[in-house]
Image (cartoon, rainbow, N blue to C red):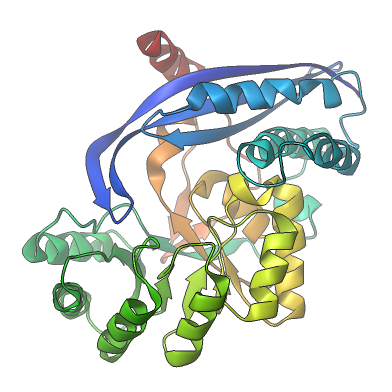
Amino acid sequence: MKIERLETRAIALPLERPIQSALGPIHSCGVVLVYAYTDNGIVGENLVFTLNDRRTGVLQHMVEELADLVVGRDAGHIAGFWARAWKDINFFGHKGVPVMGISAIDGALWDIAGKAADMPLYRLLGGARDRLPAYHSGGLWLDRDIDALAREAQDMVASGFKAVKMRLGMPDPRQDADRVRAVREAIGPDVRLMADANQGLNEAQAIRLGRMLEPHNLTWFEEPLPAWDLEGVARVAAALDTPIASGETEYTRYGFRSMLAQRSADVLMPDLQRVGGVSEFMRVGHMAESHDVPVSSHLFPETSIQVLGALANAIYLEYMPWFSSLYRERLEFVDGDAVVPERPGWGFSFDARRIAELHNARR
């Protein structure tokens, strides 16, 4: 079975309402959809994205520039594609857009592999569990006032979630502490609560705020420092009792190897787009397991659930439904857990009608 052709399509996907984090306002995503066609009729699908539809064309072009490394070749030789692509991007560097391009094609190839074997990816990759604890990450942004935060957190819990995540980044750390206290009081002591600073602090600020938040029993304090400051975040992790989660902006096994070596996070959070696709996500997951470090996911719940389901050290699926409307199927939840689909490949397929509407609107 060989890849006959690779196609991409760019769309703009508006969020239900604009949101605000320490990274700034977000009102939409630019999405690059990838379709890998085989000579026996199987089509592998995947997507990558940009924030606010900025530089979406650059990302789309990167994917298309890598197509010659896979077209005409065995669709099942995914490691072979990865090795060729890794060598090919050497001049541009092994982070950023080139790695995102690899991720886009890698995920489509794994979707083909699952469909060809008539197996969901998590079973094809070894299988560890068919349900994963999920936390709701689609709200509790900085633009909500304290009363709105409390109501939204309660609504998330009422809908069945047993874990929720809020954002940090107010001008005064006492404001962040007040907001965390309000959410904790609203959801009670038994619901897991995560807090994400979105890389908005320096080392001293993170330690100070982290100590202020420790009475509220956070499951983790996420991305307190810029992603490149591994030494600084390691010192934050050593100074606090609250676990530090990080890694969504890290690239490939080499970046995560440095994180593990420096003990810069208690929970690793690979992002399917930045880490290097399914292939690298699994390498990072197993490497973390060899250090007795758990992993979670970043975005992409419909696809991340398959790789997490294959890892024994996976602890949480992030539920951020930004791209959910692009799929025909919906995630299923039972008692706060997300159920790994047993359908072949990703277990999710693009909704052609919805995508056509968005594609036409963008032109």
